Length: 126
Image (cartoon, rainbow, N blue to C red):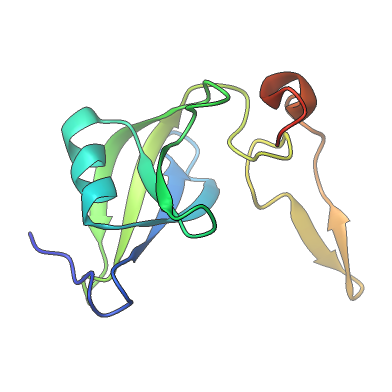
């Protein structure tokens, strides 16, 4: 199956969902190499737009994502990864999901407790 990496400048959007709970954990981006590595290794690999390089999710924290299922959208320019997360959370700010803020009365509120201390995991470099 050929994904359309060219439509969006060489990257496809990757939505990451917990295989067991169906909770959306994060959104990342993949170039062709990141997608290939994800398929080959079974661990989610992304392309960092800010650092301009590949990154294996969990390479610093150990909180890897074991890929159980991959789906593509109808335009073939986005993928859905259903994963088993290894670790208490995927968010570099210490939460289970990167979607830990909820809009309430026009203001963003933190809607859940931290799952882990990011300073301890990243040694002060979240």
